[in-house]
Image (cartoon, rainbow, N blue to C red; front, top):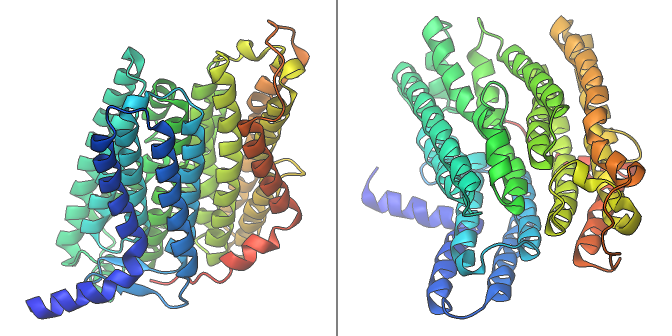
Length: 491
């Protein structure tokens, strides 16, 4: 391909790449404005600027809903409805992170750098859910990972530094392992475009142990981003040592990005996986994530660590429907992902509120429900939704998940899918025991009396909006499923 053709391809790709260009510009704008206003207290300006960029990104992505997939920049990435859906969820999570950061005691001196790092992670997540080339996959993952290592230490404390270092060490090892697996796949296929016909043709008859190992190494990098077992050990310490808005951000954005690229990769590898049934591997990882996440969360006394193990368990639920290997499973997973974003952020918004009142342990919530009724009720609703009980969107999401497993079992007769269905129901019961611990202390235990709160606060308003969304996802799930049903899951 000549230089002229390459430049023409870049020019033709740019109109479909505007959201990512906007994020790149936001990084530069934050750093430049940080240098200009370094000596001034401009916290509200930086919060507002970040919010404006993210809302603009959501608006642009929502307008770009073409029916046909478009391959950009020499078939490195693909813009389609699948990636657009995940990008909107990612940007929504970023908006909620800005709101949480606005009310958190972050060091105002470093807000420009803080938001530049947030924008970099979101940009990496955008690129990852669009990637169809191994080079782009690795670059996107590193663009997510490297800023995340810095964000984990933004408390500027000993515990934060430890969290940042652990995150870096785990992440570096997993990146090396994944890169080695990608190089083996490239050597076997002769191409980096893992959704291309050439890639699929070259590997269609090579069901060897080397192919199995290489693909497993590749998937390990994706499982790491989702905090799925056995790539999960980093999560509890990183969550505990990071600022609350960063914890909420980590629990959603990298997970959605990992889910997006995992879905694309599984769609490809299952085509040539004659000897190895990759949905079964995903099902085993899902079961392990449910076990480790839920049963470990029962023993936690720190809310952040509990939510870390909750995140691991929720990764298991996100993977459960993918184990069916069917389009319906992917659609159900996307619905559950939206429910998870709203429910998880509702909990973290309330935890952020209580952290400002120096409530940082389970026992510290004793009696807070008497004087802080609204946030206590909201966090209870968030936990109920994460558990999967009515009348919340979490119930609808779990119902869809388990229904897809039953349909998959009825069509294929695979015992694993029936086992996942029963095991998922059991783990839902287990999850209830740790999700109700904070509401139990808040409403049924006597504790230190806190000053009576004003019901008309920013957190309560934001919490009310999230609660309304949770109820809408329960009573009117068709609004979201109608959008998801329009997504084409093709290579």
